[in-house]
Amino acid sequence: MITLPAPDLSDAAVLRLVAGVRPCRRGGLRIETDSLDTPGGAKTLVHNYGQSGCGVTLCFGSAQRAADLVEQATGAKADPGGAAGPRPPVAVLGAGVTALATAREFLSRGHAVTLYAAKQAHDTTSNIAGALWLPTGIDFGATPDARALLLDVLNRSRRAFLDLDRDTWGVEQLPVYEPDYAPYEARYFDNGTLEPPTPLERLPIPGPPRAGRVFNTDFIHTPRFLRTLTDEATARGARFVQRTFASRDELAALPEPVLVNCLALGSRELFDDHAMFPARGLLLHLKPQPLGYIVHDGYKYMFPREDALLLGGSFEIDVADPEPDQRLCREILAHHRRFFAAQ
Image (cartoon, rainbow, N blue to C red):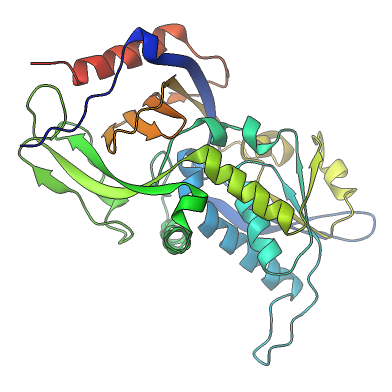
């Protein structure tokens, strides 16, 4: 049996410890139409957040849903005869992967777009994470409508990913190996977007003999993916404005008649959405290692990103501290060393 290469998990290979705060939401996605009262009349407001730990996975699908809602609210959609309604300028709030994908979608439909955010994409959690195309870390919703929304977004996003130039966007299909004792979530696969895992009597990876399973999905090299999103938006005329908002009155003063809220955790205070909560994830970035496979064991995982080998992770609910916990990071490293330990 062929055994895949082992990672170098030595102290010398460790580059940095990283913490990222996932913007999670109880009840799942919020993609819906709202309004914002101003002295000059109501602005159209569409919310697009709640992607939680799978913002990259869902970004294109949720962007399409948000754009559809704006078209419905403003009459901007082309009629059957081919005549298009006016394309109002759009303010996108945020600069993470959801906001950038949303800007891309509106630009493709002929809208002028301005992105307002406190940070640029390279400073967001989206940029430090490893992104596997898999709906992990999100609440699937407790109602049929919520689950239908997620399924529609998943299917739209999957189709969009399949249409990308994979080299330009940094999208690579890789096998994902899971030990059989790892939690198995059938709902990740029974939606039809991915083929279900294949059982294996023995995983072809270094370490003690163990049974498991394998499935194939896209791994997204997030720095390249975000650069491409940003470059596309810039090339199509998007404006980027660094700004924070302390109240809805400040939003009402924006010149754009349409706002799309991709602020995620910022929606907790700005829009009184207390279903939002932070969940900190810890990562170790090791020297780059083109291993050609992924190991996934719940919230312990190994991703071979092109600029670093990523070891994760954790899911610390209601922890918003962006500083990495040294002790927990050492535990993550120890877990992976045990996993790959020689017999």
